[in-house]
Length: 517
Ligand code: KIV
Ligand code: ZN
Image (cartoon, rainbow, N blue to C red):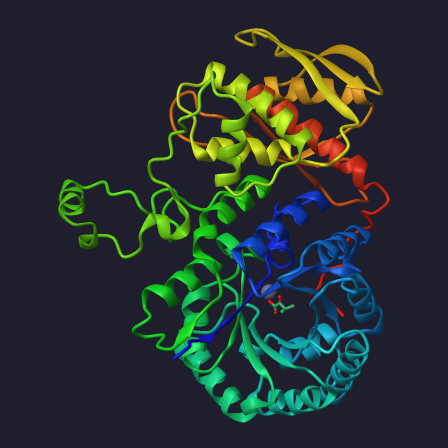
């Protein structure tokens, strides 16, 4: 007997991007969408087309590139939002519009200032209009977790009659317990029957996003909205990797159910998202945290040596994690071996990117004793950017700050001309960033600065993430820099943010929030 498939609706590029500090540029979004297709997600929510010209462009480009996953754009229940969503996904092989309006009394009264009848009319109009762009239309009752069931049945009837094919019941504020969500989904599922697919979208404010999603499946939900590494608004969303692996590992409970996810792509996808956003999963995070497969205590290690099933319910290789991942390549390895390694890690790389990444690999292999798969992943992610490098760091020199004034001398190439300048600051990072500002003429405000080590060892690569605002009227930009030298990684991250900003100039009109109508 074949299993019934639970649809995995990934919203890393939309709800996940709403995580504080997780904004991504267009090129990064395309790379993530390509990896999500490799992971085999059913639906990719690629963004919120009406939010900004940048979001619209990213969704359109993803729609043209991805062939095997449905591409979806979010839209509030207004004509202009639905139109933007419809136009953004127009070129997708498989396309969906996801429209929503709040259905809880608290949202209708205070946020929307609309009566329930007005809300139903707006929802029906949005679904009908969305149907003129695609047959595949999803409707969400925002704040379903706190909505009245009688009213939800009324609006759900109306939107199904208008053509909605998926009904999503979000626990927008992560308020419900599994037993409550289970009851809500069961009642709605018995009410809707075969008329539409029931979906859930569970936020994690009480740490119950995954538990609520699993309970929903047991009560009739057949689509789960989730994100890689559990990214999302506030405390985040239900983590895709945890839901998928729970369904697989507990097939005794989820009898006859499965997902299409290629679980061997879970770890590579998680690393890509962490490298791009600079948001590392907590070390003890289930499935993809650094310690998820580490056995510290002697008793556990002894058990593992005797039989792995004593303490291991999932094998690392099932999620694509190679525990003995020291690279056999070294400084004498050739391009062919390097390319082969990249292919094994799932990177399809063009000649230009191969050359520049190989050069950086050689520099790294000269200085670093052990090179791990995660080093290579981080290197490729940082090198494979199609953002035009308006400014390029050529050289940097730091003066000893012990007891003196921290200062930096920086040489930057712009339009084939090299400019050198020096400056001082309150600390070394401050001196480097202020000097870059002097050379480029852009004055950035640093909102966040983070450094993580990529793999292990004292000689680990430093991955620096900065969040910089170059213009008070425009959103902050994220930049990343990778180097064995933390200061160099910092300068690269700052210049990367500036290049990203310049590539997006004009498309960065202030993003509208998807939580207002
Ligand atoms: O949390 C939420 O309610 C949402 C909807 C827009 C689906 O993200
Ligand atoms: Zn959400």
